[in-house]
Image 1: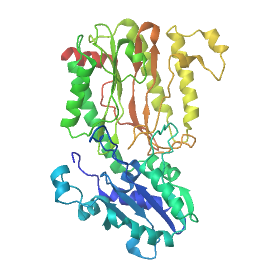
Image 2: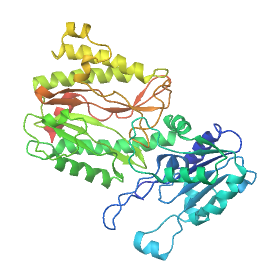
Image 3: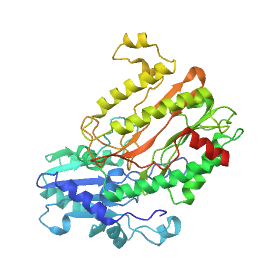
Image 4: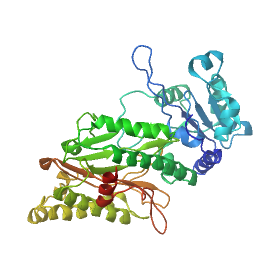
Length: 430
C-alpha cells in the first residue's frame, strides 16, 4: 500500500467505544464493499466499507468483521475473516494479507480465512440475541445497486428469523463523528498533500491552460506524495463553469480575466481533505471579482468562529444565511426591501448561495454524523460559503477544514493561502 498503516491501537479503541453502546449478547457483523464489475472482464477500483475500516483498519476486499464482545468463548469475541492467498492470487493480483498481517493491522488476534465464516457464524448466532447489521443511512445517499451488506442482511433474516435485528448505523454515526488523535494525524497528512498540490497549481495556472491539465498536475502531486489520489471527483471550473456546483467535466480552456474555482483535495490512509480555492486565471482579481471574493471571505471567517460546541447545524445555517444576505445586499445583488418581504421558507439569498456551509469530514468526504445533535469538541467540519452570480459568470467558493475544540477551533488548513493578495503574490512569483 502507498500509505503508512495507522496504528492498530486506533482500531482497537474504536471497537471498545462501540462495545460500550451494545446491550448484552449482541453480535455485530460488517461486510467489505463489493468489487464492482466494469465491462468485459474488468473491475472498478475498490474502496473499503468505511465502517469496517473504522473498526478494523483493513482495506482489503472480501473481508468480514464479526464482533461478539461478551461471547462465552473468549476466542469468539473479535474475529476477522480475510481472503486466503495462494500462488495463483500472488501471481495475478499481488500479495494479500496473511493472518498475521491482518492481526497486526487490526489488533484482532483471531483471524480466519473467509471460507471458515459459515461454520463459525452459525455457532455465534446460536448464542447471540441482538444482531447489529449495517446499511448506508447517510441522509443524502442514493443507492441504486444492491450491496454486499444488503444481501447479507436479507440472508440473515431468512435463515435466523427469530433474532432481534438492530441498526448499527446510528451507533457508527455517533462514534465516527468525534475524531481520535490518530485520525486527525491522517487528516493532517491528507491536508499537507492537498496544500502541496495547491501551491503547485498556483505556479501552473495561466491563460490558455485547460482545466484537465490542471487536474493532471494535481493528480501527479498527490500520488507522488503517497495519496490514494483525489478524495472526490475534482471540480476545476473556470469562468461561468464555476456557477455549476458539481461541474466535473474539466474540459474547458482557462481564459484571461476569468476565475478558476478549484474544489480538489487528497485522500490519505482512507481519510479525506476537502479544499476549495478560487484564483484569478491571469494572476490578478478584477475590482468586481475582488469585491465578491472579500464578501465570501468575510462569511468564511464568521462561520469559522460560529461553529462551536453546543450549536445545531440547522440553526448555524440559518445564521449564515443572514450573514450572506447582508453581503449580497452590499454587492447589489439583493434588494433590502425585497428581503424584508421574502418568504421565510424561500429566502432570497439561496439564488446566489444555494448549498450548505458545513458538513462532517473524515473517512467519507461527506462524513456521517447527526445533523440534529449539538456539535461536540473533536468533530471535524468543512466551512465552505460561496457566491455564484450566473449573470456575471462569477462563481467563488472558499473552503477549509475545521477541528472543533473545547476552547477554540483549529483551522487545519490555516497554512494554505486564502487571502486574495497572497494568492496574487504567489501567482506573480511563478
